[in-house]
Image 1 (cartoon, rainbow, N blue to C red):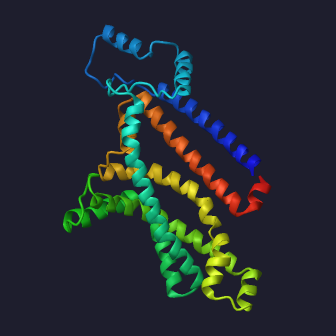
Image 2: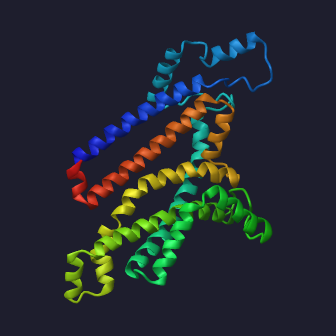
Image 3: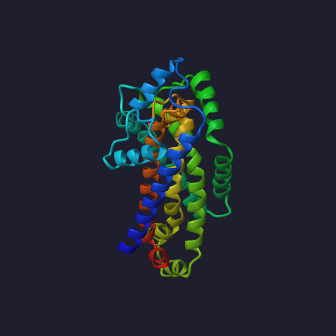
Length: 306
């Protein structure tokens, strides 16, 4: 198990280094710069600004200087907000995005797991067909379509919830539902497929032949193996929820990190874009690593094959 964990950790660190390097150089090669959108300034002022932020140095020197700052945990100053550092901005915005992601994941699991499990137990009944239809609809319709529709219905016509903001509990319901339902659909499909595979195994028929109740068969013998496809999907699902928050935060005007990332890209704020990419990439890799470890714990064949 330790060897499996070390292998996955090494792969994650290498991937993170590649992401940092690729993002750094792609930002520098994009036309324009962090000061091109500002009011026209004299060449002398522009040179002073570039010297202040170290942009007058050779590109490789800037790259290694930035890596050195990262090793100290410093993401550098923001070009758009001259009085704030990237660390401060990330610290302010990240809790909002994490809250949105965790609540959306909870919605996805609360809806998807029971639907998939019940559909497998009631195979080829109206419950199964309803669950499958929900899965197809949820996968087919993207969040940037569902979000504005729910805002139009529940925020503007019915006025049950606010159409934007992140101030009260009611403000969290619509964005979390939109993002959660989008991932409840694939979770329900994977839970159904995993449970069907386990329920057709010989040891399940043996348990039923010995007189085990259906409740015991499902929760004692089937659930752990049946949820393996869901556990393996949780890493990519959480990654999708985090990246999907860019759209949701923009639609619902949520002051989170995803919305800040979009603004920083438009503003050519090199350090803020890099800091956001590194933070998201690190979170995604940690969560994927955690999903791999849990899957290996639940199914020893995974770590033996690795």
